[in-house]
Image 1: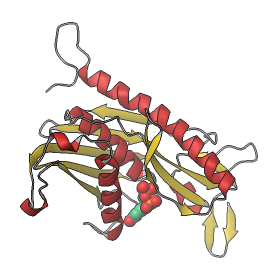
Image 2: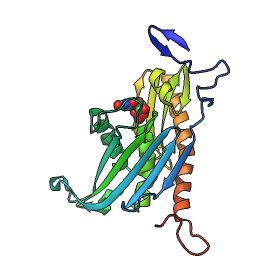
Image 3: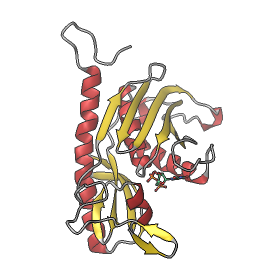
Image 4: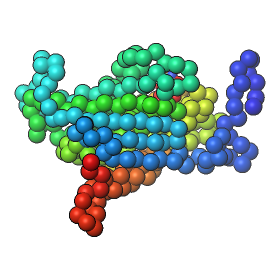
Length: 252
Ligand code: UDP
């Protein structure tokens, strides 16, 4: 631990180049995706990713509320990202603050670009993301959960959307920041990838990177997304795998 003024700044990289939780620079936190845990929603998924716990539920295509948002030639995609008051160590004020509104908007836009919305005119596809426990990277965990929930709901999409945050800590580019790395690092860059085309449909950045670092970060993020994609596909396979006796995997 080093001291900067009164604030304790943790040492983010050991002399051996390992991170505070022992990970290598290009290593993801443990990721577990469960498809279909909620039975009332049309589709759902639960993501446990490091210390993050995020539930997503999808309803639709269904009637649009409020009505005036209805579009005659396509479905609208509405998203609500919410952090539970108990999801962080200091109690968060409940409700939709500016951060949640911004995250809801960028996630809705990411999904609008992969959902075949024109197949369901005058309807709404509603995506709810509830962060139950937060440890950085929750918007990415939310996208992973929502994406599997959308697939679970049978919504036609170009592809699943794996997402991850890359960043810079102690001068090095690293994959999948945890809380201390997000707080004390030099940059945080969440992204979401369409794996088949390699197109990024969400890319945000906080902090500073030079051109070479940005390029390294994007490459690392794309590699991470491809690993996450495999976990997402496996979750859906597990849910819909036909058991020997003929029952489907996750059905109630
Ligand atoms: N965080 C918090 N209180 C808040 C917002 C965020 O404690 O009101 C924490 C939480 O652990 C979150 C992290 O800060 O995951 C990073 O937040 P950021 O806005 O970068 O979004 P995220 O990385 O979760 O997508």
